Image (cartoon, rainbow, N blue to C red; front, side, top):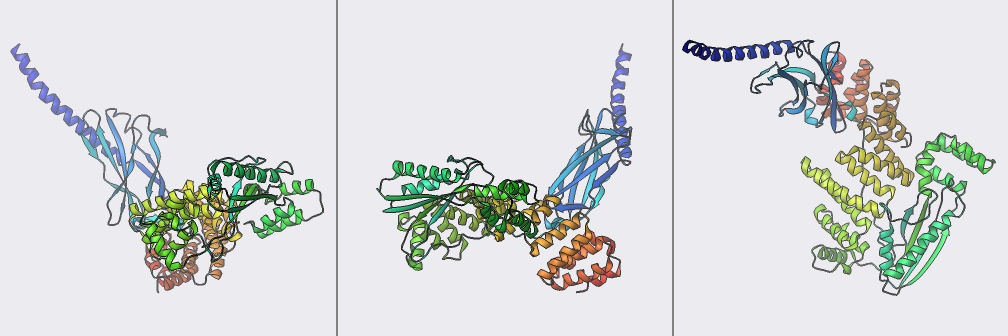
Length: 595
């Protein structure tokens, strides 16, 4: 009996040693098998697109690596290491049961990875490392050698031109009178009921009903789109708003002011539609096509049918008809003006809460903020205007101040916080004054903030609100830049057809065509951009990249040299750009790098 116990006592340590040895052998065997794994990265080199780098990684393991080792798990860690920077952990491919498929009897995972783009990441490498883990005792692990699977970032998609240029509301404060205030209300198709929903101006109209003034002259102008049912819809819209205002005055006015309200309608004939078409962002050829239809001798039904078959109809239906379904309220006020110096001093005291806000009108307080160049002081004055007036220009201008502060801020977190404040105030401005200009500013703030989907939605909304041709061109151009950042090149090209024929449009069309591999088309647009902005270094650099893709060494030499002659920073950029990697040893590249 004692002999048996002695044998058991000797066997147990021996079993532990054997198990440990077996575990170690299995770990090392799997590490050795993992050397035969295959890693594919698409695209390679990685591509920066907007504010992100998105790529797909496919990992395929040897056929029997997992099947015979059920007590072990395997994962592949993915990191990006920018030159001189701390490594960035991007995630892992976990070969756990249910996470992978079999392709040709081999365990396979395909997974998308994303990391934020920053210029310092242009020089970097994508690394992977496998880890084998004993499920029974997780501190027993073994690692494969680290493997580099991609080098550098291709930033060609970032060679777009963006504007996002919005500034303060033009000063409407005048010596004698500011003129009539205009408040727009848009209606759903075939509707005339007033609704207090997001983006409407009814709360603003309520403020006018409460104003303590001796007299108000109110004019309400109704309109309708040609495709709406009935001929009296415009008049119904005007009457609905006039009745609403009378009701609100009866409920909210305690000053006994005298009110004169009149209603009228705008014409809804083909001429009114043609006028808006001519002011739209439609290409000249499509404008001419519509003009020929609408000015022809056919019946209204024939013109309607022809219009629906035209190339411009989708734009008209989406962007023009909604702008004709409105009623406009005009309120006439007169106010005297104080001196600039007096306004500035009073505004500062209001901002410091040492003077009642009643000392200045909303317009006077807004104007006073324009009298100082200091952003911090201007912010305080606009904050006072927001607090005391609650009117859209105050919110809008405060949003612009925060945007200007964000543009000058180099710390990412602080920049984001300032843009959040800009968006907050521009949103409030948009609720009170839903115009294309205000919503273009809001979309641009979201764009600068990197919130692409929201920015795209509001760019589209701004276009639908309508406006002057120059403004619509700006909106379509920046909308196209955003679509390019999102990889929506067909949509971007479509937007650029409505954005005029300026430098930015031609540069972005050139880039869109290059990324779609239509190189001859891209070349034409880049050369047109150079005609509009002579010797522009970005246009020359883009043509050099295009030359590299077309394997045209003459284009690489000429345009790279001209870009560097006008901006030396393009020398370092070209040297690190994967687009020119194949040209580093060639004479054309060396000659192009000569300043």
